[in-house]
Amino acid sequence: MPKRALPLLLLGLVWLLPQAALAESQDAGAPNPKRLEALLYQDCGSCHGMTLRGGLGPALPQDRMQALSPEALTHIIRHGIPGTAMPGWEALLSEEEARWIAEHLQTDNRLKTLDD
Image (cartoon, rainbow, N blue to C red):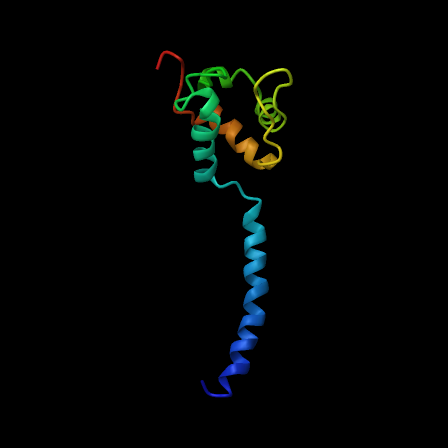
């Protein structure tokens, strides 16, 4: 590599690294729908059933989820329900991620009713 190219390469790296870190930090707070949907149907599904029809935890059909406000569902997801097997996921999910799951359960849920 020519000696003149090295300073340009270093200058480029000095400029690129903070840009990459900034882009990563901006994306870190944005919910990742693919990851959250997988979490819902696998991790939550380990108690609520892989199709959300119930198991250790109750069924989570869309019509039942619509009886609660998005804020109430978000709170339940993040803080759990004391005295039950429902743990809080606050350590693993941001407020925005829990809100995405709550809204997904109310609007995009694969299980519309228990009759499905």
